[in-house]
Length: 295
Length: 97
Image (cartoon, rainbow over all chains, first blue to last red; front, top):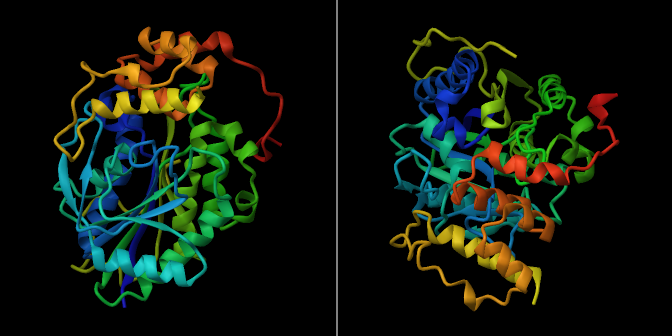
């Protein structure tokens, strides 16, 4: 059976790649420092594949057909699609065995995810995936979520779907170490007069609830309230799917920076899923950053 | 005529210029908007790359953002175009109490 050897969520503003240096140095170093820590941990823990939740931005699906969840079950997926995003456009290996197991398990658990044998991946997954593996060779199972086009699945449903995905990973026998990742959020507005605003109070409140494991405060939020922290705040579903997958583990926020040049509350949080002393596949940590909260 | 046609037109235009797995498509230069059943107002907005008009017409905001980015509008530029349409929302979220 596979372990969820690494669980984390990170914001995915495309400017983290396309306008990296526009962010103040301290914010940049804090945010990417957290992602560097995650990347080091992925290697140290021997992660063999990753499952990444992120939202659809009208890249694969349009108004004719818009699934709430779509699992990428193919042997490969393509990305990133944005011509202006400075990440190499490549075929990224999938993991059909794990992906089909997740699809089967979630179907048997009362969910009805769509599936795709080839997805086009935009910045939503690619910015965070690239920070996990600069070589973009780590097998990736993308799970694309609807976080934009009403009617949206309730956030509690996203959390419960994540729990089913977590159970699926843990019951998969084809791998030993799998990472589960949420990519998106936190507060931001796009395509409307508030683009550029960040609701810092919400972001800190959200991270505190994840750290305390007080998810009920979040899981009953209606969409109309979620949008008070931006139409992009619907992407919290990716974070909550990870929280569900590893429940009852609580999150440790690693970084929070309201990066105004990137128009987004940028955060990274880690859920420690391995018992103390078992995290290292290759002994003690060799990085100089230990898990710490810098929010 | 429907707002769907405008959405489909803008979506196809954005995707035509992206780097897709299938040979990259035809690009945006030769994009033919005449095949879409647009109203005069919608067609004018598309031809003029009028972000403010798209917003007023009700183009989905995620798609509007993608259009603005692909059309070369910086975030500060398109915010200025949309600011006249800002409304005040007096509601508060639970994190604000």
